[in-house]
Structures are given as C-alpha cells and as structure tokens.
Length: 299
Image 1 (cartoon, rainbow, N blue to C red):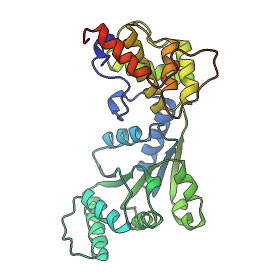
Image 2 (image 1 turned 180 degrees about the horizontal axis):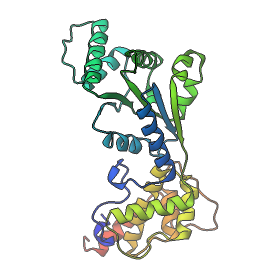
Image 3 (image 1 turned 45 degrees about the vertical axis):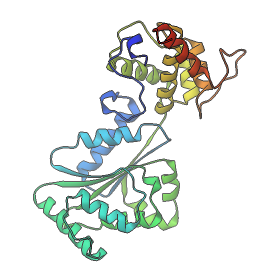
Image 4 (image 1 turned 30 degrees about the vertical axis):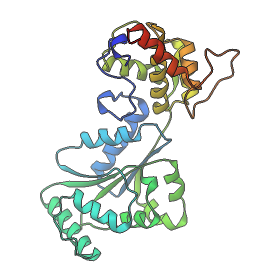
C-alpha cells in the first residue's frame, strides 16, 4: 500500500520468513555456524531455541536452502504428530513408497533400509524439525529412537530441533535424560541490540529497493528497540505500521509519533511512559489509511 509512496519494489517488513531478506546478524550467523559444524560431525541431535519471533524459522529455511549437495533433508514444519504419524511423515520425506497396510515395525524396517541405501550412495540424512516444543512426549521418544539407526561407523540420521524455550524446560525433565545426552550442539538465539536493529532495518529497506533519505532515525530506532525487546518479528510489525502511518500523513520519513502510535496499536510490546501521545486509540491505522487514500485520490 505504501510501496509507491516510498518507491519500494516490495514490502520490506513482511512477517513471512523470506531468506531473501536474510541479514548477517551475529546471533543468526552464530546459530548457522553451530548447525553447519554439527552436521559435519555427523552425530546425534542439534538444538536451536529462542523466544517467539527471534528468527528460528528463517534460520531453519536458510539452513535447508544451503545444505551441501551430499545431504538429503527431511523437513517437518508441523511436528504436532503422534509417534505413528511421525514415522509416516519421515517415511514420506525420505521418498519411500509403501502400503498403508504395513505395521509400525515394518515401517521402521523400511525407513532403516532407505537410510542405509542413501548412506551407500554417499548421502548424509538430516531431519529438521521446526516448532519442536509442540511435540508430545511419546513423539520425542520416537524421535530419539530414530537416532539408534546406525552403521558401525556413522549415524544414519541426524536431527536438528528448532523450538521455543519451552523445549529447553521440557528436556530438563528426568524422563528425557537419554535424549538430552544425545544433544551434541545447541544454541540459544538472543534478542538484537540497538546497533543490530538499526542495521537490520536499513538492510531490509535496501533489499526492498529503498533509496531515499534515512527513513528511521536514531531516536526512532531507540524507541523501537525498547518496545520490541529486540525481537525481529515485533520490529517488523512496528516498522510496517509506522510506515503506514507516515504514508497516511504524506511524510517522507518515519517520525517518533508514528512509532509511538504503532507501539500503542501492537500486542506484546513494551509501552514506555510518556507525557503525551499522538492519537492514542486502536484506530490509528484506519485513520492513517483513510488519510493516505485521500492523498492518492481514492476519495
């Protein structure tokens, strides 16, 4: 909606994890380095955890897109599955053809045979599980048992878990001690600091084609940093709404008032104490859009 106003090729702050907007932020690069090192060692489980919105799915997609050609990837974006459903899903990701009439033991045998066949062809197989905190206890145990499949010299399957901090808490329980001991590498994604946020915002605008004056100044970024707690998803939401408000006023940059209004209109942000507020109602975006359409001749 504001793309033409700011002369953009695409929306810079979409919530969809688009690897085309990937920026080499320190926590994200460190996470990828840990994952790449873990996969090269060929052992057990690797775990990446972080707060909601810190970029786990983006890193997950980046990892999958950049896997070497000698890796075969099985990807489970929604692991809210029973152990039986988990095995069927893994079999499908491995390209197995099978009859629905076979029992679970037969299915496990077919999975092992397929893994051995891929290994004989020189492939390393990695199972990537996103939103792993959603897995049931029984499914986590079924996942652990998959890593028992091995030859005398190597694991037939490596597992990478991406999850929220709830996954860490669950794995501390005594019943998960066997799985916990198989996690050879782990990384916890931290929030971004102010300098990283400044670079992150500028990078996304540049990728989207922005070539104008600085759109988000130092003062605006400072407010975004505090309100978002350094969480990329919230940064995207606030920047998107602030740009809508700026567009609605016909401004060429984003102002503090636009940021404060976006914060007021967004769930889960930290609202800083202040003496005044620009509009102070949940309808700020509706007003901005109404004004913006008037400016471009819709009314």
